[in-house]
Length: 295
Image 1 (cartoon, helix red, strand yellow):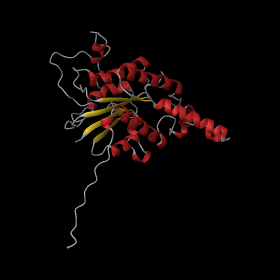
Image 2 (spheres, helix red, strand yellow; image 1 turned 135 degrees about the horizontal axis):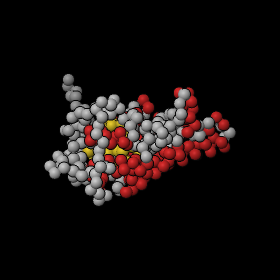
Image 3 (cartoon, one colour; image 1 turned 90 degrees about the vertical axis):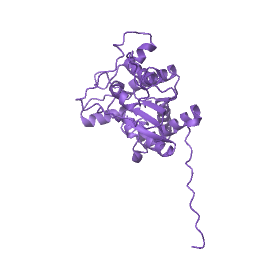
């Protein structure tokens, strides 16, 4: 196998492997062929708390745990000896919402985890009464925990050479979400005002651990605002029904084709800026055998 680019996230990541929707991971997989294998570990419906239950199955094991046992990596970072707050939750093997525990979850014969993308926040940022909601400080802690698994020398997933990239959750198209909820006869669980707060936490965590981030929230916000202004100037009343978010989001939450292409370009530019040695290169063309004219 080649080295690995691993994308860990929720349904936006899961759907990013769909070439029919021009998923950004499908694009990256094509671009990195013969250079890196792109692994899509997106789980629809997951927030960072449920993702924390399976992260040990998602990341490669690089070393055996110490025989003396481990304090939580995050607890050590903060100088605490009380690990109860940071302990990884036990996996409920009877729950269908948790990825089945398995020994071959990560290909053990892969060469190296070169890039790890963490893309969470959309489900965490739902309203507090909804089961997917994660309190914002717990969200911050979970993101730091993911990083600590790769950065802490005592972690069995320790991989100091792995490049970490965060992606902020996109904005929420409130009008689109409300319309869909009305059709489905339920209350809307997502709010753009909440997504904004969780996107800021992603920025802060990335800065804290010295990792780059793709600010998908700010980019789509700016583009939607531009599109609204253009539509208003051109007297295109119907074009602003969904405030411009429908140009980038299929349902007010998930990326459509244009949103995926946008994210693909932003991820690629971030890789080129921060790790030029990992920039995709064109695969060499195969040499065709020479055919003798005598035959």
